[in-house]
Structures are given as structure tokens and as C-alpha cells.
Image 1 (spheres, rainbow, N blue to C red):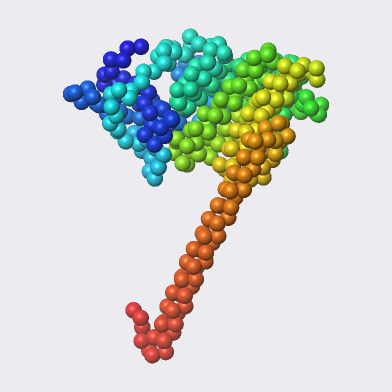
Image 2: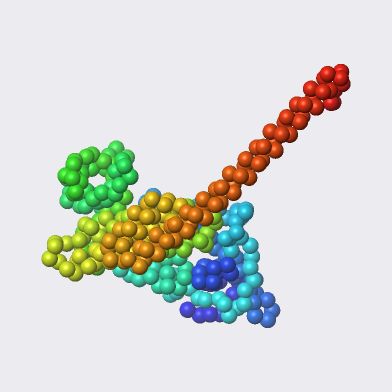
Length: 366
């Protein structure tokens, strides 16, 4: 791609407040010396790839939060937003988009190719752009099961308790609404049978993925992207990104167990263990950032049991430090609230006292 920039060109630029993160921006103005340009940042929130697929599912993500962006609308009280205003940067800091970004996404329907594109963008520090490709790859990997479920397919459902479970489809009936299906399923672990709607399917399992483990690897990298976006995008979206990271890790762990293989399949066991270790580490960090201490401690301890003692111990230490900081902050806040209540009460008592004195003297305060 040529580097002959002009007004309207899209470039990749380092984010000022996040030196390791990059994002897309449009050139709004170029000075006469061509040494600097004014840019307008694209929203940090990831958006689905533009395709010719007109279905509703093509405009949503399976794991990452779908955060809408309204043109011309600016956020307020946003310390993390580099995208809020027009910014001037040196011309030599502009990086061209990758070649595959400038071509139609319809030319890349291969799951592995889409994952490679996401990997390249993640290495380049553009988590927002990477998410779009990882989600496209994930969607392609299970679109047959999600859109046209068939008997014998394996799916992941969320139970009433919030747990993710693998089930096998035993029967399929078309619903009254286009694209809807009623599924008779049997849970793999318990054998329990249940009737569910295809809208409750969290993920369709790619059956020929036992060797490459594409879905697991996509989900782990998706979690890494969402961790980065939790720091980059607006603070109000932080929780949504971290919850998405937790979901990605949980799905990867379910898939790792599903593809675990027989007891004598050492290669399959090693792959599943690697996925489990990475997922536990990433999920524990997300739980810590959400102050969900019991869940974080549980994952850290499981990580130690899986042979990652140093990582698990480090996480446990981090949890205790953050808990202590939170306790001190809560005590300080409680004291401030108590003092405020005390002052308000005292002011009210003084006002009542003055009012009583004025009434006894036959005078009015007003």
C-alpha cells in the first residue's frame, strides 16, 4: 500500500495515553510543510466487519460486547478517550493499514485466515480491529450450527445457574419465526434432556477442531483484546469488556475439556492443559479488575494445581493487595459519609433551635 497520505486517508496511529496501543484515524487536515497532520480518531469500540450478509447475526458479536457508536456524539468525563477531539500528530507516526484491511472481507471466509488477520492486528497493538476479525472467524466456525442446526451437532448452552455446558442436538424443529428452531438436546456430562430454542445457543462447536484448536485459540486472543480495550475505551464500558473476556475464557475452557481426548492421547491432553492454563490466568485477571475476589482466588488456585505455581501465587498476592486497598478506600469513604451526615444533622438541629427561639420571642425568621 502506498504511503502517499491525503485528506480522508485512514491510518493506524499510536494512542497518546496508551503507548503500546494503536487505533485507526482519518486524516482531517495536512499542514503546508507536510510535517504534521490533524487526525480524527475512529471509535475505540470494535465494530463487526462490513459484509454482504444481511442477516441480523452478521451485525452482532458472539462474545465481545457490541457497543454502538453515534456519529458526532462526544463522550463526557472520559479520561481514557483519545478519540474525543481532533489531534495533531507528526506525519512520520502514521502507519498504513494492512493489505487485507483494504480488501473486501468477503474474500476471506476461511476461519484460519481470519484468525491470522486478527493475530497480525493484535501484534500491531490494534485490539479494536483485531476483535472484528476474531469475531468473524468465530462466527464462521459455527455459523452452520447456529443458523441451520442439525442432529448430532454439539453446542454450548448456558444453564439456569449460569454455567456453560456442552449438549448434543437430538431433534430439530423449525419455529414460526424465520431463522428460529426448537432443539431437543442432551447434555453430554449428565445425559439430561431438555428442549431449548436456538437463540439460547452460546456457541456451536467446530467438530473438526480437535487438532488445530482454532476456536480455543481465537477465544483466548479475543480475551486478550478485551483486556486491552478495557483500558483504552471509555470507563463506562470497562465492565462490559472484562465480562466479555471472562466469557471468552470460560468458553475456551469448555472446549478444551470437550476436545481433551482419551487418557492415552498425550498430545490432546497437553493442548487442553495449555488452553486451561492460559484461560485461568486471563480470567483471574479479569475477575480481579472487577473486584470479584472469590472467583479470582478460585481461578488462581486452580492455576497452581495446573502446574503454574508462580503465576497463580502472583495472582493471589495481587488479590490480597487490591483487597487491602479497597478496604482502606471503603473505610475512608464511610468516614466521609458519616461526617457529612453528622454535619447535616447538626445544621438541622441548629436550624430547629433557632426556629424554636424565634417562635418563643414572637418573631419569624422570614
